[in-house]
Length: 211
Length: 211
DNA sequence: TGTACATCAGTGAACGCGCGTTCACTGATGTAC
DNA sequence: TGTACATCAGTGAACGCGCGTTCACTGATGTAC
Image (cartoon, each protein chain N blue to C red):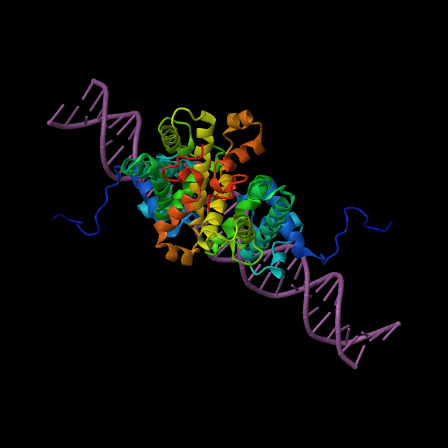
């Protein structure tokens, strides 16, 4: 026990401020939503002066990019996990779709940032790039596997896009509180998700797309 | 020809400032996007002092609501027009879907405002409300007609939601410039849209949902 | 091992900015008699 | 038809705010000899 024991005398040098800033940003997103996400707010949340982030990020945009990057990593893990848990080929797409939408429901503000910050740059979001192990490619390769080799590549591509759009649309829609009576009737949120996805061709269990 | 003929001596009282403000807002959206849409910018664009809008709208939110309202009206007209133009029952849903997405492509910023301003209020967007002649109901009633009386209402509802989500997802996605080579291969933007929608069960011509 | 010095990663005050909103005002219009 | 007055719909200056970013600075750390 030394002097100045009160209030955790955080050393002058933080040690890992970059990571701490990204986590502070995520905390702000969870608790106050995307509109509250300013550079100053992030610095404040991390307990640091408003100029400090500039030693780690060129500007606000670069910080947001880092936050989005973490988001896409998390989403990718969710989807990969769902894929591995799927019982059979037929349920693969449904499980991946459900995990996608559930991620967006658990992290709605982060989800928005993931898309918005690439919209600003007029660039495809990280997870949608044709990047070997992007989330988009995970879906496409799953489709390819499920569909078999005789299905033309263009159909695989279109089905992937269609599935992605549907999942994204559902993700955005679940921001809106409605359909409540419908959800109850169906037996809860997840049953509702499965119900909606079930009405989309490519998510039908046992019928891997009408590809 | 009277004195002061120079520069159109706009009378002190505007006459129809409310409408003019909404139109100014739309012009800003078209040319500079949603982030440029401030109350002050709208007043500027309308050639009026920053305080003037307060005689017509309680606050910024109310102005945005009015803008969104116009947007939903326009979208509703597009969709109704598409419905009327459809050659047969089987193509109804596809035509409506295409018109929805095309609207979002022609007015991307307005489209965002239509959804965002109700997200802020934690309320369903106007066009999605269960309001007799909302766009949502247009879709649902079309489904009901196409599906026939033996299909349970819950499936109609789910198919409507699924279709809406898919169209919304596609609308958001087309913000991102990609899939260009795919689009060219298919013969253009509209062919691409139809291709994607065609991979979603409920838009298949002649197969009114797998409801 | 000790010392001089460069570099790194913070601080905190300040900048200019555009925003939403309020305020006292004034010019134009409508209405009662 | 004219006049007095209330109301309406603008003006323009000002408010306080939080923002992103810059700046000169300083404390802590790492390195060469």
